[in-house]
Amino acid sequence: MNDKKNKNTIRFLSVKDGNIDVAYTDDFIQMMKNEYDYFFDTSDHLFDRYPDIRVFVKDESLFTENPTVYYYQDNEPITTFNGTVFFAKLGMYCVRSLSKKEVSFLLRNLKRNNDDIYSIDAAA
Image 1 (cartoon, rainbow, N blue to C red):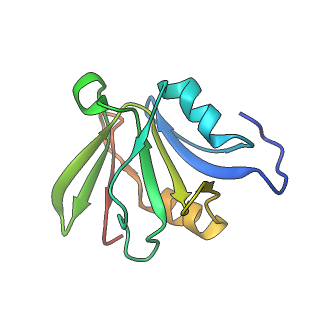
Image 2: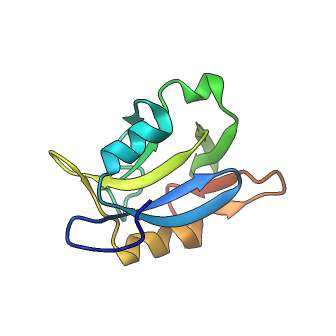
């Protein structure tokens, strides 16, 4: 992953193997292909305050990977994101960079439990 930032660089957050990392890439799609072979994004509007944030996970990771992030709404579990999880923004035609404010929001609200699994609430 590229740590140098330019106008085409995308800032994203990854959760993998119990660790959170703010990372940068000039080619998010290629980075996803390298990690997953292919990908999909979860439902939109996960967070009311930041409706453009999406979660990217490997296709069918629910059946093939261990849990990484539990997603809650009103303190009720809604879904589990498994394997390597990426947070970025999805526009009409491309993946976009997270703002510093969005990264801060995610870092503040992703809570790790004793099993190295994170949780985040939609209302965070």
